[in-house]
Length: 139
Image (cartoon, helix red, strand yellow):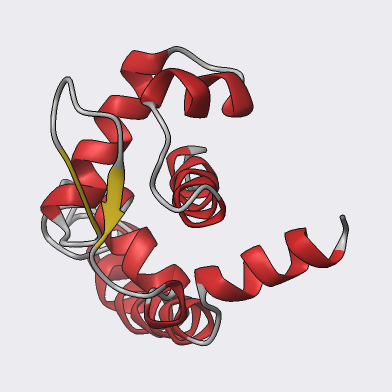
């Protein structure tokens, strides 16, 4: 399961855009209904991914790309994808004496790799700007 970090990160980026960067992590935390520490942690991930820039003690967060250039895949990779870029981990200690244990890794590798590829392709087709557009159309 993808954690809530993904949707919270999109929430954060949406708020930054809507408020033109003039926003504090405490306000974002109130909107998300979570602790500001959680928000700062996710913002740090977004910063390391080159999506935002913020400085401690300074009001204001800068988007480093227009939202139309930030895909869900960018956000997913910033806050969710493990370091080895593999979504599905296949256990490696199966019993080689068991027919299933001996063959499970090779049987799972291709379909799980394809599932990850399809997920990433789908995420790449949606931008955070589309989310903000939807939110603004609801006002």
